[in-house]
Image (cartoon, rainbow, N blue to C red; front, side, top):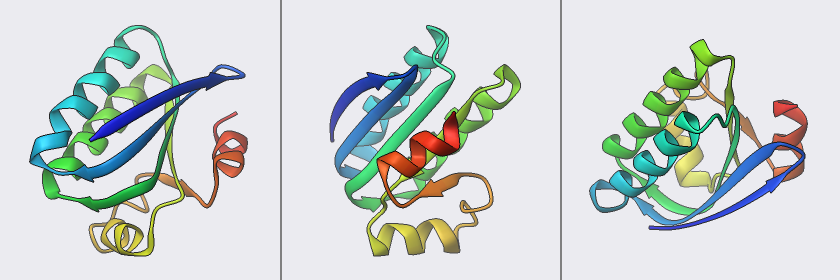
Amino acid sequence: MDVFQSTSAGVLTLTLKGRLDADGTDKVAGLLAGYIDRGERRLVLDISQVDYISSVGLRALMLAAKRLGPLGGKMVLCAPQAPVRHLLEVAGFTSMFSIAASRDEAAERIL
């Protein structure tokens, strides 16, 4: 799992590339926890280059969102590929996360 970061207008965007499975989840979960601990409250996860998310990966996203909630933070997922979006829908994550079609839409939803 590769992770690239950028910040614009107070919004941290993490672009994930690869598979969010048992091998990549620890890295992503650790990064998310670290950013939240350092005070990041507006996170966009660009998952356009993620071709698979396992149950462990879903759990990491859920824990980060639950951690942000009481802090007044928000996390938006953007641009999931069709199979990943389907998985998010089937797992009921579309009610937990805001899912945007693009980075621009995600930034609008988070501001």
